[in-house]
Image (cartoon, rainbow, N blue to C red; front, side, top):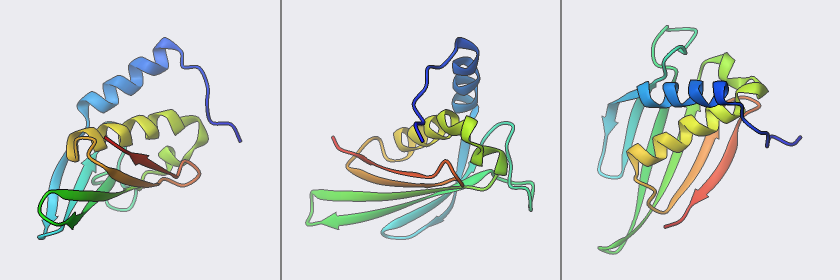
Length: 123
């Protein structure tokens, strides 16, 4: 299936509104990992009514200056699993990477039903 499509201005505005209003809070921190609850306007976890997802950031440290980051994003709202929301899911995850890890060398794994994907960010 081809998930690439042109976006109309209305859809782009909706995506920008969601990503600008998205927020997150740290739930857990260890020496090499963080877990963040992700709050996405208009979406939530259907079983708890809380955060629509979570992001887990794991730092692989190599020596004292090199590192590689593994980031997993798990989205729980079934509406985000629908194929017509792929661009929204992609934009949400791209913004999470920007805000949480700043586009350092990162391997991203997104779990969002049929909108799941993997990506690698290299500086």
